[in-house]
Length: 188
Image (cartoon, rainbow, N blue to C red; front, side, top):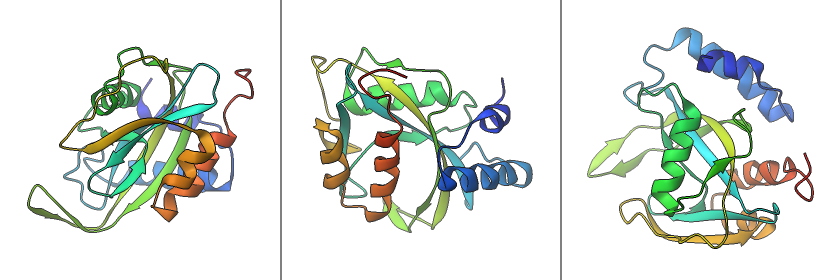
């Protein structure tokens, strides 16, 4: 299945996801090279909301650029298999080796505004991340390791703590939405 079809098939949870889904489909139809970051107006990213076995905690990383606790994820860099990207980024950023998708279907959609910033000595213009989120699961007993070029800490947190600890105010409703969508007591 192609990524456009996956987004088409996604059932939005709330108004934010309904609006962002419609906008993403529009971007796919008009923006060339939307899968690579050279597309400076908007491009795709894939993220993971990583939970423990009983859906009571999530893994957060302390992101160096944003100076905040955050989920894992990154640019798709031409890979149209967004789940593969989310899994790769989650493993690289947390060190967890036992990550498994709760489902292969998209868990959340978000269009995120990225402010201008410096990365590796280069100025990055403001742009949009067309983000596709997947729900992954891992054991709390797995070893966590930082990825020094991207984060300076990795930790399991209670769901509410993860929302509270992010210093990016625009991400609080996104993380809360991801928590609210979780199966209760592991039941879907």
